[in-house]
Length: 87
Image (cartoon, rainbow, N blue to C red; front, side):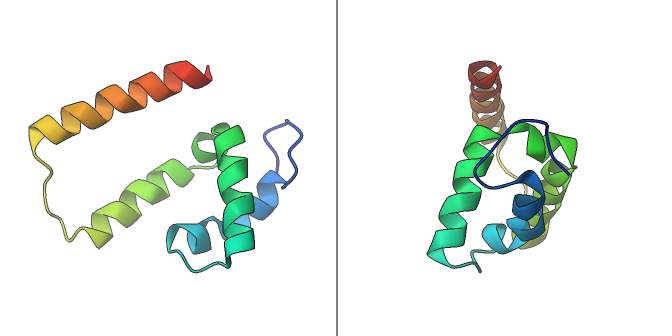
């Protein structure tokens, strides 16, 4: 699988290891390669549904605690700014 853009680390390799990355269970070299790829290839998160998996992971790890509305608003604003930057 690929997003169609050339990367030093292929999308398929990143996707195979992304959960190790998220759980901080990969070695520093792999972590750096995955981080670089995700910085370059944000569409991987959306295209392969990893975005939903990340949300589910955060929900599980946070024990169902609800974030304050002010925090949610700040996060949404920042995410919108980041999406606009990358487009």
